[in-house]
Length: 296
Image: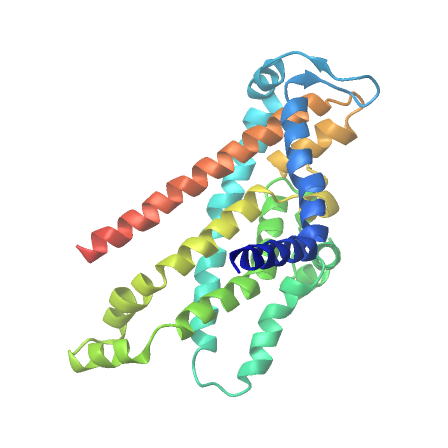
């Protein structure tokens, strides 16, 4: 009897692995093996034309001494994260509060706000190129003559605005799900105790949304550190490298430069991974720390 049960468990386990095997094969080949090979390439000199030559941490040293990385890509990336993440988090939270009310045409507005998130980022980038062209709609409405995407002072902010526009809808739905998961009885008890709307927001809504806030901020930080397609389509890192970020610099070193530096690009990719990991752990400690402080 016991052998039959054990055999049934083995068959069930094999069936389970058989069902997930297509995803598992893709994950192992295109994620695990690719990640391991990228880490290996980061310790080599490789230009795609000759076999990789081991040179240890030379690639990392060159990255950390590179002027374009230190003066443009690294500051631009952190600037992008520090501006976009707070604004898109706040905006999506406001939209979620609005969509959580009993409004007319509520489903219509939810669809409209979410629509940019399901549209191709390349398509939206092209639309923004037309909007902010010298003869584009924005200049015609405002009466300005600014060449927004060819000016180092404005190009990066246009890309930031587009990213906020396209991601707020998705984050709004996440916040909306978190808001609807808060029991109404908690708010009713607070009202009986005499709490006003502001007190309920800061002492009930925000604390109970803390896991959601952490998830939204984490997703936003990772996405902003990895921004590439919008920059590739709209400015190609220009003008004057004012929109060059770490991910675009990886692409530039690996594929675009006349002298391909795949090993150095892989080293930069590893460094970017470590930066994202460190920032994520830091923000987790900050959010959890603020939560424990509020509870005390």
